Image (cartoon, rainbow, N blue to C red):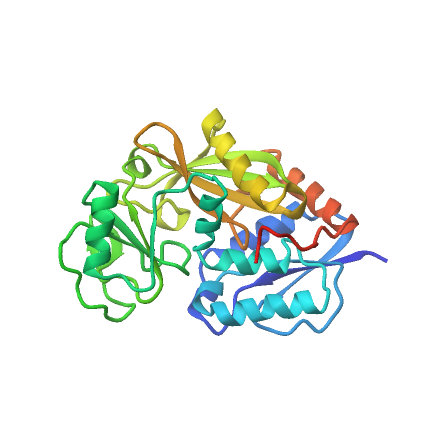
Length: 314
């Protein structure tokens, strides 16, 4: 009897159900086509009524639109002792970008960050004094795909309005109001527009490949959705060391997949932007060996659960 694998997909009741994710799901299905298992998919927002040998949150896009519901779904899977990889407690921890504070406290170099419960003019002034520069990035603590992320160089913040408020700047749609609720303030890193953002992809704790994502002219967003230029390159040694420190914080044997996103700092080193452990695009189609490595990782995950608890993640 063949194994059964379930891939979690977006909530169809939310607009994020549409977009790039079907193509990402197709890439995973193609990569797993040679595996001795049936591949199923269902929205993460729906109860899991059947038994599966492995559940993968790989395409659970939209979790940031209903984070409490998503964490509740992960918690229920953990309580039911379902084999979920990456494990539910790690996935839940990764929902809120304030996980970066945990990494920083453990010695992993992140972009300098001021965490705040609500962005104020005083926070902006403090961040500028701390970071020594005017251009700041304001982003929600829970977000994805650069949603509601703002580059801010003004003095007085506009009043927060609806999510739909935006303007077009050199062809890039950008929000015009600060994020509402818990947020992060960071210095804008110029290298994101000149060199780009590095993404290092790991399967079962081992580096598979690295992708350099350079935004289109006039934009700062490095996602393919915004026409960024992506190419596979050998990561610099400093980038590799940073990624390994982030992976080691969680534990190599506890991660089926991970994407470590980083940007070069003004001193030439690298700073962690994100440790993506929920539904990252693993860029399987960009490297000839990536799909095979991913398939091998999933086969290994079906052999051992790896879903033990850790003191690192709460």
